[in-house]
Length: 342
Image (tube, rainbow, N blue to C red; front, top):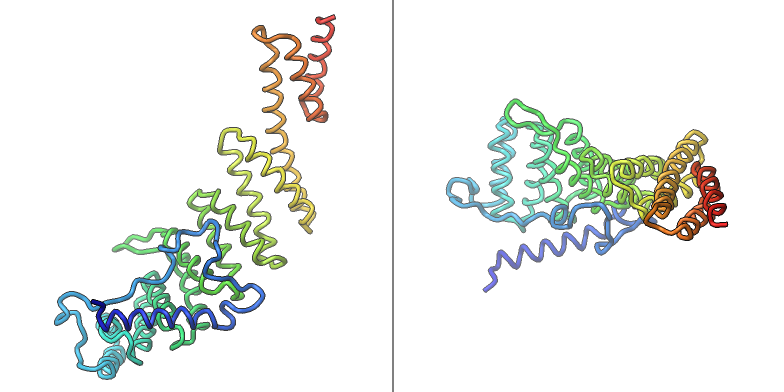
């Protein structure tokens, strides 16, 4: 049997999702996206989607609220914060949200909890989670647009400061990247969404996941055409494509896709130096295709193959790549084979 608390939680979650879709400045406007839209290169929805609903902790007589009502518990949390007892204040806020999730005090306690983590204890990854929880379940009861922008700023702090464990600091690119992804999914029409998507792609590159970075750069260019981030993404995507091309064994499909991209980039780029770079990358990709085609032609020029098959192979190569760096050598060998056949 479904409990009253479970029904209440479901109702709050539904209203939060409903109201979030109607917030101007976050999802409205010419760049509106929908829940069914895909973000190629992003992690699965289960990793960046709606936060898991908070429930009362075990041993509630220790971890639960210290007061009998949500109003009294919120006043108690504020009293602790006023005394700069930040650890106790955050626990008091969290206990209120868990015990009385549908009370008017719950969203205020949730935001206070996130603010403490951000401004006083500087636990940026935890602060991001709590702000995300706030917009996921209480979007109509907070300043949704302002909180989303705060989430973006916290994600930037996560990237800048990394994560600390005891006295050690280390980069936590996965959680940071997922934070930026969560921002984009919730605020695709915000002015900072293109910058957040750029951060996602850059963090994927830092993890050497160039294939997914290419997907994000491509999606960024399509969603925010004409913007500064979209123009920068064109060059970044080209560089990432070349890294993939150089790091793997020859793949004709990949080479041809890269050649097609470079040709498009050359025609759309408005910067002369950038076009020159694209032209250089195009020549490198074309050379890879030509080298492989020439090696394939030479494969038929052996004692185990007939002269006719070698002639056909060289003729095919020259018809497809007449300006190749191997063209002169191929023509000379083709002349030899034809003379031998006379």
